Structures are given as structure tokens and as C-alpha cells.
Length: 255
Ligand code: SAH
Image 1 (cartoon, rainbow, N blue to C red):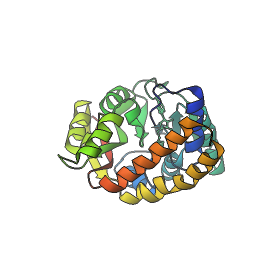
Image 2: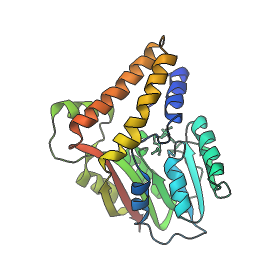
Image 3: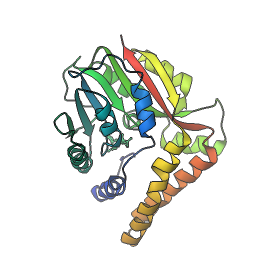
């Protein structure tokens, strides 16, 4: 979800589209919990933030499995409203709160956070840039967990190389991303690839129905039609080239 050069109406449509989905990026309960299993030392006094939290699919999973305070940050007010409704619905609202804000202008005190989480969202400010900026907000011994699109192989077909070079030029191989994490001042603790069904069953398939509704509702809106077309193209490319790229969790510790 890149929002460069988009009008307010286009952003509203993007919000409406993704807001009607439980997740706004590929992932699953299992992968969130797997990533959480690498984090040590959390307790009821811990302060955790989820940056680019969307409507909070993964945040609620996290919050249910850890003690302490969890703050979700997202730039879209509509997502934060849905996030806070979700927290309420799960009986978590006393320690789980969503706030509108930007992940590159955090309102937290330096060295105040135990864990910074971000699934499928750090690309908005760039992986290395985000990791570097976020580090000063972590306590010594605190962790960062970010999932990021990555190449699985050193070489890949031209079609998919060109697609990602244009969509997100910072896409890189797993060893290069790990090196960037280390250069940003973390000890890389763990890395794992999320399974294919996180993309298909949990991310692309639920969009199919939303796409039909959208095309009907906005049949006279050229931009909406192009948007749906680009979503379909991305899914088609994923199915064709999923051996070459995917989302990878990177877990690092500030020493
Ligand atoms: N973590 C969620 C959402 C991923 S989609 C999930 O995995 O389901 C990426 C999210 O980043 C969107 O909700 C988008 O609104 C948010 N986002 C984009 N730029 C942002 C920024 N600068 N600051 C905070 N959130 C941002």
C-alpha cells in the first residue's frame, strides 16, 4: 500500500477496500506466534508497539499472548477506529490502544519500548531506514520484529524482477536484509519465511469477494477499476513466481 501521489478520494477507496478485510497484509496467527516465540523477557510492565498496525488482526493475536501494554499506530484514522473496536470486542481495550500516527514520527520517549512489531508495513519508510529510526525508542535488550518482502534466490525471472524493482526497489535477498539489520544496530536473532497460505488463503482469497463488490459499486470510477486490476495482477504474479520471493520475518535485539 503505497500512497504516493494519491488523491483523498483514492485514499478513501483504498481504506474502504482494505478496511473490509481482516488482514491488510500476508500473515497468520501461527506466524505471529512463531515470531513472538523468539522474544524473551516480556512481563506485565512491558510496553509494546505495533507500527502500521492496520485494523489490528495481528495486534490482537499478539496482545492475547503477552502481558503488558500494546499500542497500535497507523496513519489511517479509519483503520484505528476499526482497531479500537476490535480491541473492545476481544476484551483487550484496557491495555490495547490504537493511535493515529506515522511510523517515522513516533510519539514515544527514547529507550522506552520493550518490543517494536511491524508486519508488512516497514516498506512504507524503507527497511533499513525504519530499523535505524526505531532503534532509539527501544530499551537496551529490547526487540524489533518486522516482516518484509524479500528475494529467496540470487537470480530470478526478468518479469518479476522488473515488477518489484518498480513497486519496491528496496526488495533484497535474505542475507542482505539480515546484514542491514545488523548495520542498523541490532543482533539478528531469527529469520523465517512465512508459508504460501499466508498469502493465498489469508490475504488474496479474501480479497476476491471484496473486488466483486468494489467493481459493482464503483463501475463508473476508472481509478477504482485500475486499482482492482493491479491487485489481481499482483496476485497472478505471486502465484507464478512465489518460489522466488515472499515475506520474511526478521527479528533483532538491541544490545
Ligand atoms: N500490519 C497490518 C497492516 C499491513 S498494511 C497487517 O499485517 O495486516 C500496511 C499498513 O501500514 C497500512 O495499514 C497502512 O495504513 C500503514 N501505513 C502506511 N504508511 C504508514 C506510516 N507512514 N505510518 C504508519 N502507518 C502507515
